[in-house]
Length: 264
Image 1 (cartoon, rainbow, N blue to C red):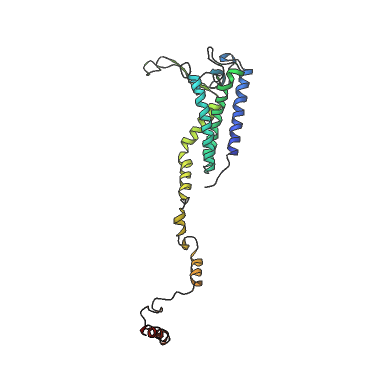
Image 2: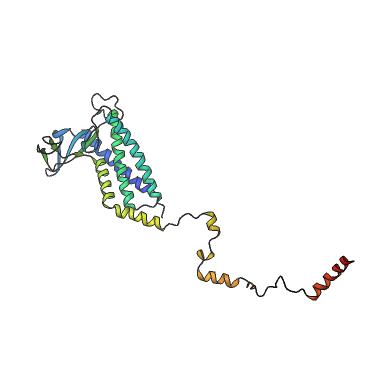
């Protein structure tokens, strides 16, 4: 496992945030909202179309009074969690592809958090009747891929009979979408490499177990043979004197006088 620095991945995150905010502010100050200010980029299917989104990504929203506030708070926690997870993955040596994808997701989350938190105050675009402009700013969307629009057939459940248009989104939404798709498409490569690297790491040895490990575990065969050849030969049990052997004459002479004194 190679510990990586998350610095370069946060640099990408900051660059994407700057791009997202720059485009949003340019659209706000230099484009008219709606069809009046629409700009065609590629034919009739890719356009710049300035709309305000009071809710979630791709024009979705929570339909109750404090839904926007809850959504903004959720985005704040998600932003912190994604940033922490990115650092964690980098320190564990995760594949670069996974880290780039996470940095894109983080950039998208931060970009929309900035809109929700500050645009209601600095751009005065909070919806009418909001309890406070803080955390109620509307997200600026502008990328319109106009593939199809019209009324959905009546037989379609839930949405039948409603007018439908391709969602309009922004660069932050695109970053989140692309990052998630990269992780889904390459999850075997991203997380498979992590599993292989982790399986190759040795388990943390216990202090008691490490004290009795044989030297062969840490030294090669040549070093082990050299160590054994340098050690003095240990006498076998046949070469050692027996405890029951008959004492020598010198030993018997040293013992007899003591025995003689006892008998007297």
